[in-house]
Image 1 (spheres, helix red, strand yellow):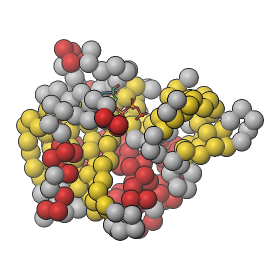
Image 2 (image 1 turned 120 degrees about the horizontal axis):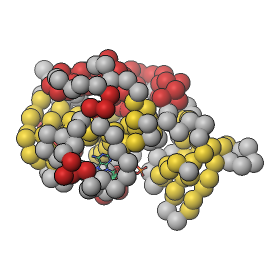
Image 3 (image 1 turned 180 degrees about the vertical axis):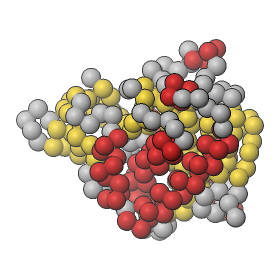
Length: 243
Ligand code: ATP
């Protein structure tokens, strides 16, 4: 049976699960009400105040190994959007590689962290921080436009939302393991907020401009340059920004 650990206040649910990887089974989740040290990518801060967010991390062992993890994080985005839609919240889109957007504002972040060696299976922790309704006192701590699920409808069953998310996530990850990112590409591109829009790609000091063209069969972001050539970007140290 699936393990569900509920912790009211925690540093980070990802950190908590990463510390006990070898005792976990696929689908085990850790759910919190508040994170005191929530994390984004590359050490950035993730604001997760008491009662304002749905915060959960799920363990998954990926037999295909680390190289497949990039595609997996894209699939997580689709799984979350579909779960929300099934619960009556529509209009959520995706931003490569792993944010959820509502009207161009950030509704949720996904942080996939892993442990493993090249060539072997890897152990993943998939973290989700989804804004429900943030206390107004906390909003100023977020230094980019954000969205809240409450904008899309009444939230009256947070537990139900956690269960729906957890079940659908497991379902989608199983499909991903069997068929890879190919099975999700078209759908991801349909949900892509930036598809067809002018964007900038930040890679360290470098800035590359072009038009976003969704993802390819490997989950790489496609950028159409001014001369019509397509450049691809695979995860890691790459950030996507609107014009
Ligand atoms: P990238 O495109 O490189 O992922 P990002 O700005 O989306 O850049 P993340 O690491 O995904 O970075 O997320 C961290 C950032 O998200 C923070 O720096 C902050 O700007 C923003 N943020 C923090 N907490 C929240 C929140 N509760 N809701 C929305 N946005 C938040």
